[in-house]
Length: 224
Ligand code: MN
Ligand code: MN
Image (cartoon, rainbow, N blue to C red; front, side, top):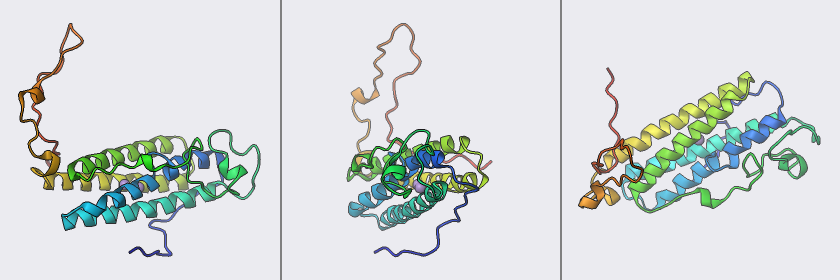
């Protein structure tokens, strides 16, 4: 079950309205690497997970992503200010101006509606974890792009918090992948000679030797 807490996960600050930047932030609200996608991907994957610790991890992170969505939506709402005006948004999604009465919309920065095709669920824990690690990496990249394009101190602080949380999720999913070595699609990995071949199709020159074809695993860097 889910409960709603009246507090935000982390305070959302905006120095001044900026509707064009609000349209850009829609990418992390209803875009392919946004918070709604992350929430529904992890919650959607959780149903067949047998390992109770990993199931819990998926649901905890999925619930946190909903809290991120709440923060991003709050930030977009504040950035949209109070006046619907035809020249406030210079590019990108106009929907909050022309349809939504400045409410954040479930769409990306270009106004394309959110879609469940952003979500991948395979029923294989290794494939899903790798997909989640990549999703967290992409979410971080989008927050970095957004961070560089705003000087508003409050917005920067809020984005910085969210970006750092995606790094925490990335690390937790990698830890979970390391825990399930030898199971699911990590089993019988790289057993035939075909899996150890490199087809050198751009001669002259070759920069990679034949692959080792070991199952994917993350080696934590040493602390020293
Ligand atoms: Mn998030
Ligand atoms: Mn995340």
